[in-house]
Amino acid sequence: MLSKGHDEVLTAQQQRWLAVGLLIIVILIVGLLIMVPVISKGLALNDTKHNLLFKLQQYERILAKKEAVIASRDKIKQQSAEQGYFNGQETEALASADMQDVIKKIIVGAGGQLTSTQTIPSTDNTTDSATKFNHIVVRVSMTGNSEMLRTVLYKIETAVPLMIINQIDIRPVRGRRNRKTGLVDPSNELTINFQAVSFMRKPPNG
Image (cartoon, rainbow, N blue to C red; front, side, top):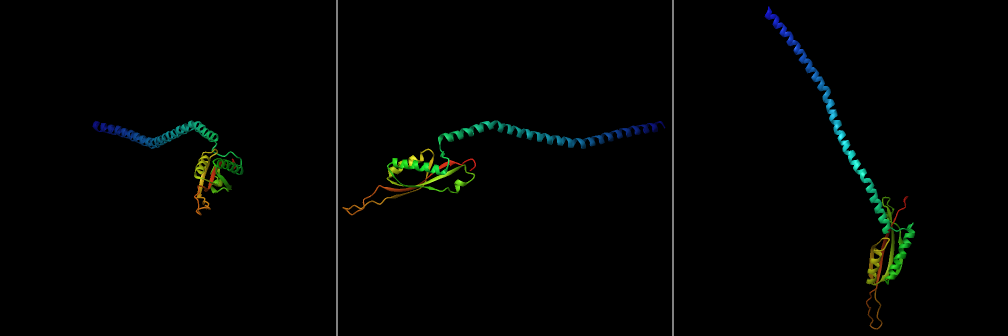
């Protein structure tokens, strides 16, 4: 009888330990079910935090360069204004008149003869809203020899405000017939037609 009671006591203790073990297992399972999502969420938030910090550092570096970029832009604008590449007249008509006067002085000074100058209306490029300047185009006709032409082209393309030579056409002038020999004497004269292009800034509302 004593052995039987002892076995029954051990069985009860085993049952209690078993119950405690099951309770611990349940607690661990419940804890894992709660903690795993929390830990995963925490890791995700940590990654997000690091990404945000990285972007913030990038923005801080960009902002730190802002002053230098603005200063560089202002310097470029100042240099452009000082060099006078753009025509400073207020209207295209005034800019065209200024160009024609400069070209006339260059041709006459080089020993050539100016036949005519004509302003060409603005093309599509000059009315493009994305373009920050207008093209001022003048068609020029003149006569002279090759040395004169070389001088004229050089002085026009090195002039300030900036002018560019475009669509040049050069043709020899027919010589005069010699009354004594009846032959046509050769001529060094040339007929030259070209376009000179200058630039002026668009007005703020242009």
